[in-house]
Amino acid sequence: MQLTQAVVICAVLYACAAQNDRPQVTDTALDDALNDKRFIQRQLKCALGEGPCDPIGKRLKTLAPLVLRGACPQCTPQETKQIQRTLSYVQRNYPQQWAKIVRQYAG
Image 1 (cartoon, rainbow, N blue to C red):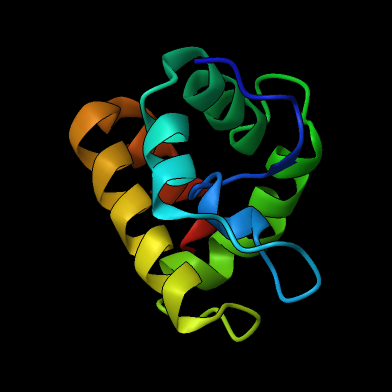
Image 2 (image 1 turned 30 degrees about the vertical axis):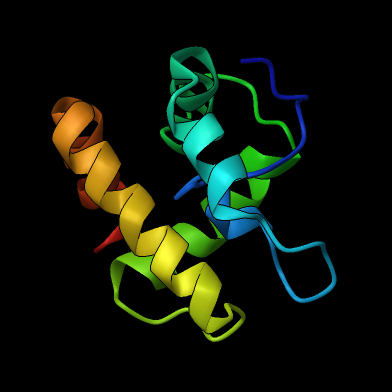
């Protein structure tokens, strides 16, 4: 699956990008993003400062501290659910990067 280089991190990545002034991200689009390993790895590298950021990555870096602390005031209930799903996915499938993200953003 190919996604255009666009909006933030996260999904943490893709789900975080959909803010009130942007179109909603469907659950299908989120599934596609989570199944695109290259996309996820690019966003993780951005979030960790290990690679360049596209608009999604930039937004992720902005929202990551809020999301990791359990509060995202800019997020709708659907986005919050998608973000939680994305975080669970990253925890399970990218445990080393997850640990780095937590260290970097949760503090």
